[in-house]
Image 1: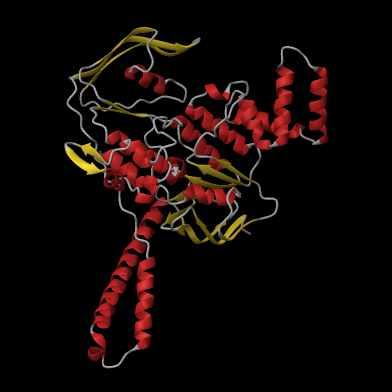
Image 2 (image 1 turned 135 degrees about the vertical axis):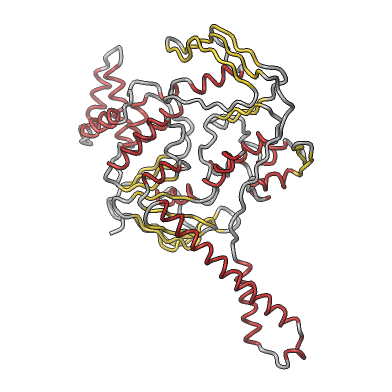
Length: 477
């Protein structure tokens, strides 16, 4: 019996339906990869499954007693406190009592009255088993409950939020880009953990290796339609290509017949001898059907605005050291970056990759040693937290800042046409960026960066949230 059933579900956010007549079931033990273009509705579908959104039409049925937990695409605003606090919060009000008891028991001064009141609440709710579960979850995910959440790296924050989702012992786990900000070792750990976990998983990921290793079924959102493909990624790719070819042939036959009927209707009554009302009605129906057809979206067309050549030596680093308090992030580091180099920074979460980038760019000053930037340097910086986007501006304003045209390699281009190259319709281009999906925001940041003349491109986690097609084009660029 399915744990969750979506039947005839419609949902829109203005404009065409984002999801139309959606049918989907989630069975026990499945690992479903949810795929589709950026902005296709993947996160929306997850929110509908989780009950955070209500469908415009149709229904979402959840089997009685089934627990659902969701790992969001981004770290929620205002998340703070200790790691224990954040994880325990996944248990609701009882979790808040456990966190309060935890703080009181570790306080420098003992407050017996306060501890007694909290302990009584936990006793009444029979909650001590859940306190043990919080501890076990922290241990399983190798987390320090006393650490301050705000001071963790992006990858460690994601791990803490995963622990918060798991602590409620869900039957269905919804993971929206779970590998974002995770290092290679952490992704391998997550893959192994989810394979051994007994519940159902529905996940969205840009990580093709992770998807291939984990998925037992592929569910695709394409132009409002949800299609289910049993089996792994290789089976999906083969069968989808067959379906698209068949669809293209069927559309071509339909369009040819429609064109013939349009010629017939224009011939006039004499040429037709008698007025065929049934044929006229069929033509009107065909016109309506053709008008409702939703074409496959185009591909991103990327072109970066080239700046003037920098000097041959781009960055010269000599004996640089940097620490946060007693924690050394970089020690006696020296290197030379030359024009034309393509350098990848790797290392565990929290090891200092972003810190090193900021040292190289001059956003942080080394505590010893020297960073010398080369001549005529024009830097485009893609940061992992997307902090350079203005939340109160539209996509157009973020790219052009009020101008109608941008200049790209000596050629003027209207900002609407430029954003269409990055798959933004005029409506999406004018909308506040708070309405954009995570992948659309990433494409917008790429559009903004590539519109600026540059000769040094610095990218911190550029692949987060991008769809597979955009990732492949970014690799080629």
